[in-house]
Image (tube, rainbow, N blue to C red; front, side, top):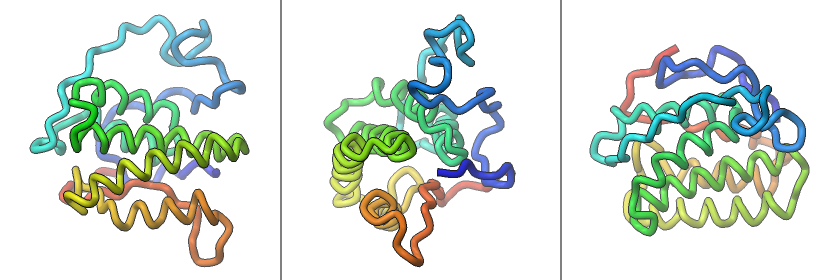
Length: 176
């Protein structure tokens, strides 16, 4: 999957890491001395509150990372706030769905079909459960996103369905 250009929408002003981590290819960001986060003190995530998602820098930075193909880093950002949720509740399912979808994109990029299929099925399944309760959740039109992701994971080369996994949030002023 081709990384996006720098003209994409941003929801935070936080800097991106110096490289996109791809397991088995680049230095592990946390464990390898050349990792882009090696030796940094990890800030504890702020509890994720759905009612004020627009103010959640951790959530929005995860969206920024994801939208610019920093899939591993996005999964890490979201995992931090996922750990602050009741994981079986709607916010926990939503975040875990995004995390699994992000990792499925890594597997797709690596050509690991089995991992991509199982992670995308699990992640999109969680997002479907959230969509049953609220089609627009934390700014994301889940019905549209799930349909687009189904085409990316099941039929990525179908005409008319570009491989565009980006998350488009509504209810936010766009930053560039």
